[in-house]
Image (cartoon, rainbow, N blue to C red; front, side, top):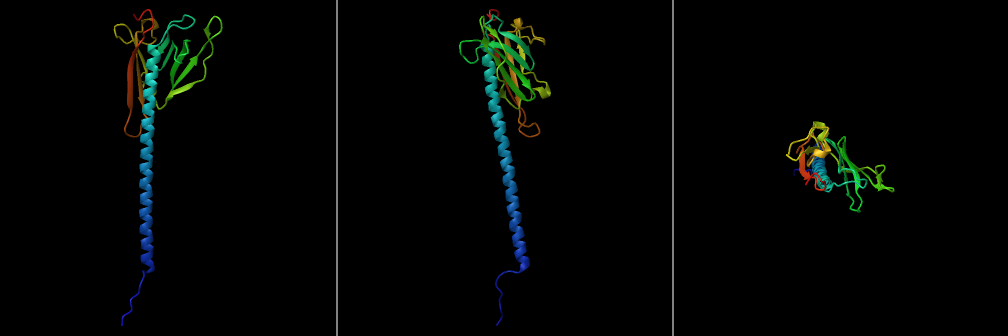
Length: 198
């Protein structure tokens, strides 16, 4: 009567363990790749949302630009990567001097509150980040372009008394070496509260 052996030999067991190990490593690698891709997509989406809020805040500041508490003209300076103006951005009834500028890939804002009697503008307060991953400086796409009453772009240095509208453009991308690529956000805002804009 023949004898049958149950079980498997040592080489078969080693092959089985190696196959299971390969499947586990491949699955873990796939999960890691999907996780990184998902995280990148989330970061890019967050950066675009932050950029949208920044463009809206810039447009609102431009539209509500008004004479300073010390009588200063609403616009101080318009340059390709910076803008300084007077606006009541915190809606407290007092007009602040607000400066926006690009520093690396970060768009920042600083606010100077009016102080003293008579009111004047002191030091700028805390710096705020209003958008990150802004790539305008890398390819020289200006954030701020000023236009006169005829819609003609004004060259730098911009004569602030000639400005009627300002186009704001932000190029946002978490990483330029990965898809989906740059996302451009743009709007145009008109100065409303100057004697010259009427």
